[in-house]
Length: 108
Image (cartoon, rainbow, N blue to C red; front, side):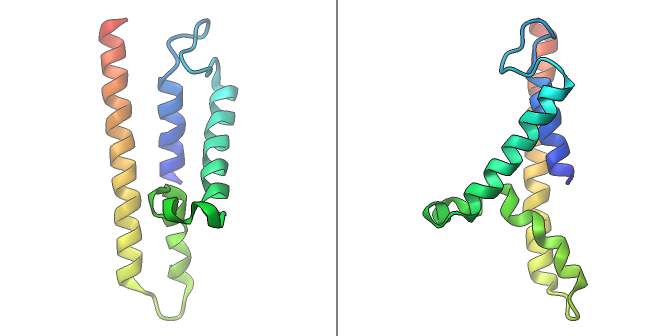
């Protein structure tokens, strides 16, 4: 769920200020709604067979890896692979957010 948190911070960081948002995130409630909408959209689209070829690129595909911990025989290879993918998405989103925020802070 850290990935969803960082998605919310990314969306929140896109707002220039409360009176003139860049992508429509005027306050914290709209940022929360946009984050949940993005997560649910990727989750639902990832389950549609028509978009099956895009499924490996959605972060929602790999977020269910924690359920493997409750299996009698833990598949460590799969668990570590999915954790690494979620970590890569988390690192990329965090770096993108920091770079955009720092640039925005300097420019505006």
